[in-house]
Each structure stands twice: as structure tokens, then as C-alpha cells.
Image 1 (cartoon, each protein chain N blue to C red):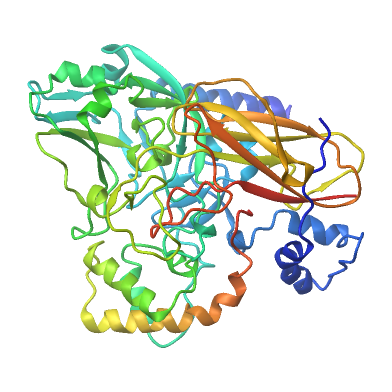
Image 2: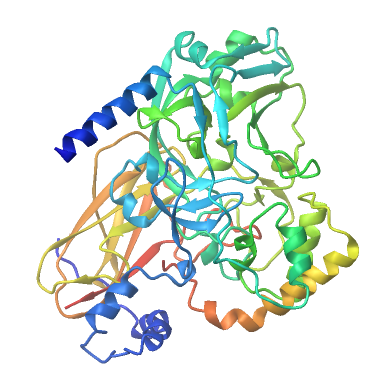
Length: 118
Length: 414
């Protein structure tokens, strides 16, 4: 009986969807991944305040651990290429934070990745 | 057909496994033995690149691997590539800016204007009734699919290999729409814009372009309003998206709203600053080198994957099994799929599955009986109708595009 009731409701819902001709579509996107927070450290507030205007922090924490020069270039790319409005002093704080917390010293963990393996 | 495949380099195997096994406190590896089954089960799915990335369920989608939340980037688990057609709800998602969250078909119009005789505003009803319907099966693959495996590593979306999918796309031919508008003499590029929006006005909107000739010469460039026979999910482009078969997904603009014909080359951000590859035959340079000249990414190269058995899976000694997978290219069609035998000395042809068209995934299968216990490295290489194939060493370019190295997986026969 429970199954029959479920089928009844399903048909009702499907009929409603068909009658409306799917004229309106709306979706609700989930919030940012709470498990992908940037590490605590000097400058983390500046990173959150600026970077999360455009993207969630998982864009940062999933990146490879490249050196300070690469991180500096990346911050400049966000400003000059992707149009992020970050002032000069914040840009320096962000680049320093990223190099310190996501730099080559973290690389050990990812050395297994590479080659043609998946 | 039974063949001896090149056995796995034990060191490489240990490299891939060592850390996780140690962490699990169960490194029971020894010659002829395996890590304990319950640990193995956890590791079978393991790819260091995917560590810590949860499965998430977004609207109209099934559980996909979360790369980034906002803008959303969701990756398809490899198991969904066991069949040539990727289920719509498992199809990957990739936005550069924010996707639309509400679309009303009663007000939505596809606007076509610019260097044309007669600008048009087409409703969904117009698309469905004023033009002949066209359908094709085509692979949609992110140019950066597999970027996470590049070495040296590269900043950008750290995709494993799940930023791809294959679907039947149904809609209308773009060239039919353009001929209804009447493209004026001197037209050069056509631009495509969708309902997705940047976070702030200083961030460039996502707009792509194709040469007019790319559209007028090719009846397979479509405006699709259906994917696998159903309306597109919002995150895959509802109500309509551009289909550019054979070319990387960056051109397949989603939630399409505006098409503009230009009498000059389009110089927008997403054509001149992003999605560029070295202007060389392979689209690659020496790892770490800076290319002399860049051009927009375009046609896909040849790729193939082993989907079954799974990487780090276990197989039975002396029992015949079927290696299975998919292969695809940029539109010449898959000619051969080969699997190495005799320790890699010869490659034997796999059996090809049903032909769904030159732009589709092509299923392949290969009978193999593991002759004795031990570790085996399995590989696959495809060749397309133009004789193009896959390199043994991965190509490299500064943005992490075009990965198509011969893929390999490791299995253990017990």
C-alpha cells in the first residue's frame, strides 16, 4: 500500500511538471565546501576577504604546491587577467600567505601523482 | 587471444600504495601476497589526486566528485564510462563564472544579431518548429581534463580524467539559423554568450567565438536543447547549448542566450588570453618551457581508457576476463584500439563496439587471461582515422591542456 501511495504522488508530481511544460527551471546551489577551508595563518583573513568574492576556497586548497614566484604570478594573474580588485598591499599579503601555507614544503604529499597512471 | 601483459614495476606499485598502506597500518606487502582485503577495498578507489575530494549531489545531478564549489566544478567518476553514453545526471560540470539559477522559458530568447541582414530572437518553440531537427552523439571534454597529472604541476583546475562525457545532443543546425538571419558579406567570427555571470563587473564574461566558416562548412555544429533525449540540466546548459563536435568543451557555451556575427576577429578575453596552446603540431613544448607563439585550443586529440578492471583492482589467475574501455578523438573516428602483449613487444587489436559516429566514445574490449599470480600493468592505445595516436610520454604545455598519454592501470592477479 505504501508503494501505491508513492506511485500516486509520483504521478501527480509528474503531471504537474508536464502541465507546466517545464517553462521555469530553478535550482539552488549548495554552499561552499565547508571542508575546504584555507589553513589558519598570518594573512588568512585577507585571503578569504579577497579571493572568495569570485571563488570558493577549494580553488586554493586543491592547487599544487608551487613556489613563491608561482604564487605571486598567480595573484597577479587574478588581478591583471581575471579582473580581481585586490589592492597592492593585500596582494602581497595573499601571495606571502599562499607561498608559506601552500608552497613546495607541502609537496611531499603529492609526489605520488604523475606519469600516465590514474 | 590470451596474452602476457607487461608486468608491473613493483617499485612503482609500492610508490603508489606505500603511503596509504602505511597510514592504514596494514602494509602487508610481500612477494606473492597482498594487502589485506578490507584495506584493499578502500585503496581500490584511490587516486592521490582525488584524496579529500567528497562526492556531492548538485541539482539534477547524481553524486559527482567535487573539485570546486563556486563556480561549480564537478567531476564524473570513471565507472560511468563503462558505457559509451554517459548518463546525463553523471555528466561533469564546469563553470568559469556563476551559472544561472532561474530560467523562464516564456521569456528566454536566443538572440542572433550583429553583422546579419535580419536579427532574430528565437523562443524555444521557434527552435523546435522553425528548423529541421538534428541529432548526433559527441564527446564533450574539458581542454584541461587530466591537468592534475601534469608534471611539472600546473595551477588551474586539478582535474583527474573525469572532465569528459559522451551524449546524444538534439537541436538545430547553427548554420540553418545563420542562413535565416542572412550573414552579411565580410563576416569573420561568431560569438556565443550564455546566462552565466561574473562575480563583479571587472571580471570578464564568458564569451567564446568560432570562425563563420567553421559553422557554415559543418552541419554538425548544433544548438542543442536536448541531451540524451531530455531537456538539458541547468548545470549542463539548459535551455540550450552550443555543440562543437570534435572540439574541446570550452566552445560548447552553456545556457546560451546571445549569438553575434562580427565583421572582424573577436578579441575577447576567453579567446585571446585563456584556452591557448602552443602553436606546434602537438600543442606542446618541452616540460617547463615557454612557447614562442600561442593559438586558441581547438580539435581534440586521441584518447583511450581502460574502465574495467579498475585501477588497483584484483583479477583471477587463469580465468578469462574482458578488459573494457572507451576511445575517442576529434572527429576522424577511432580506427584501432590496441593493448600491449609479450611484455610490450607487440600490440594486439581490441574488438571495437558499436559505432555511434565519429564524434562519439567508442567502446572496446579485449580478452585476457592472467597467466600467473602477480602484478600486471595494463595499457591501451587508440589510433584514429587520420592515423593519429597517443604518445608513450605525456605531452606538456603551460596551461595543462590536451593530455592524451597512453593510459595505464595496475592490477593484481591472485
